[in-house]
Length: 271
Image (cartoon, rainbow, N blue to C red; front, top):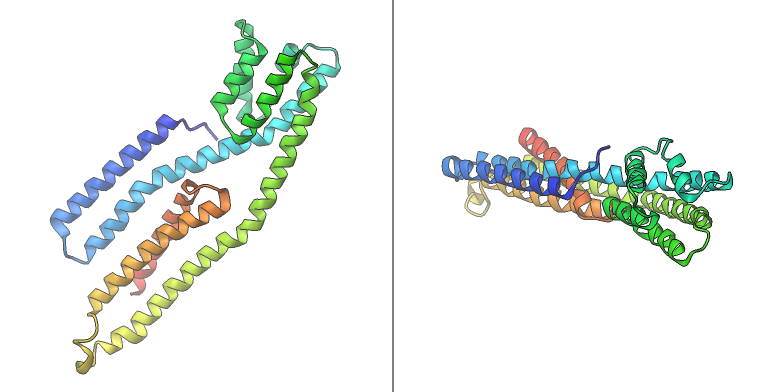
């Protein structure tokens, strides 16, 4: 998975929102008041959210892979240190191995050290570039040990164990919250089923009674009302699923896009 820069995320948000606004303006000027206008609103929302959802997922996978390979990196540095290498040579030796997306960052660190930068500066710049939660916690330990003049290599082994235990705790948390994400999808499916059954078995039949025509919404008005309800339900249910599953609201964008598409297809062809 490639790294996604903040600048790329801002560009994606800007372009997608601009396209969504163009779709909305076009639909408003030509289709305002028609039932099909609501379909263009859903299309605009999906256009606005889809690129950001994809980039957020790619960035999450990249950061996750970086954190998962940190214990392997620290372990390789410790093993090289035990053979009598200096810490700088140990980092250079560790850079010859494969650590997924961490490999490119590690080779950049080696290149910076060859230019004359200190180990402390190299690790600090690495922490700023990667900026994952575990690198922000583990790198200061190495830097402080380097400043104190102790055996820095002895810090890597407990730091690697700390990172490994943190990753295990995160995996356990995700395993525990996964059923709640499934509940969000099930609840939305039940909502769609209820809406469809109500419309087809109740509202359609009630509109055929002359005595109730003035008291009930028309078929088209009821269809639009349910359509609007499904949009709101899908959007916010997806955000809640992302917050529960990965700890951030932005992680729920992909769930929102999936639920929006599912709700549109269900109501379009079943109502």
